[in-house]
Image (cartoon, rainbow, N blue to C red; front, side, top):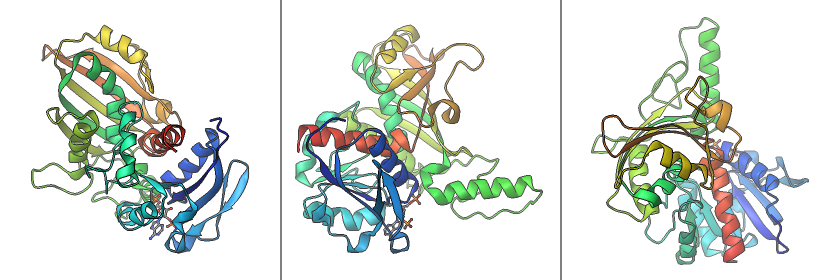
Length: 343
Ligand code: A2P
């Protein structure tokens, strides 16, 4: 990114799964950084991280003076954002928050740059912009071009979510469990998830709600309606954790307002920003989370086919790097628009 003006940027949760990817994407996209402030817990203070050819010292979040930064990228969990994002915002540091904490607040924009970049303008109300849930982001990147072309009445979606979405501890839990089981042990430690995740599939992400859905599922409903600015769009999700380390997958069925054929949908999606269509009807002609999506910026769309059970139904298989587009990259794309158009 070529800009003469440079910005002071803090990264909250810089030693975590998302924070580390934020640092590498800031580097890779040449984000115009003046000073970088990697922040984490006391335990990590003094560690060094590398970005844009320099080594930067991790500081304790608790004692950081946010007036030193103009932009703050937050990925240290909801309770940390709840406490520190308002402090940062008050000090003049515009927060781009990766947690669910502010997403439903009416005066906090919720942004996917390929879908509703105009919403960023609303940051002035609180100095906070929210990054949507990883599953919502990739779903809407894939669906927005179809929504614009023919309208969408209803979305049915089942997610297959990687463990990296729950942070480094969850990655270790999957690897430890798999290693133990492959070494002949029958007992594994189960801490992060409610059940064993190695060689298993768990239909439960985040807490149960009164209506029987989980909060992860309801986030996809609330966030889709907010980002599309469409309270009438119906969303019916089932969110599932699978023993994959990187890359979320989604089996999506939509009911459109006007009929769209698979050929038309493929043509529209092939031209869409942030989307790669990989859809050959042959062995291996589709995208998978680890092999194709991981370490890529685009969301991949495969298995585009008309629904044989519904006249205006269409099926899609959508995969994306949950840490990259689902979190770090989306935040940085928001920051890029923010500095280019508003600061
Ligand atoms: P630390 O590494 O010092 O614990 P992940 O999502 O991979 O679990 O990472 C969480 C990130 O949030 C890490 O950078 C972690 O820092 C940071 N974090 C967690 N708790 C706190 C806290 N109380 N104060 C500051 N940073 C925190």
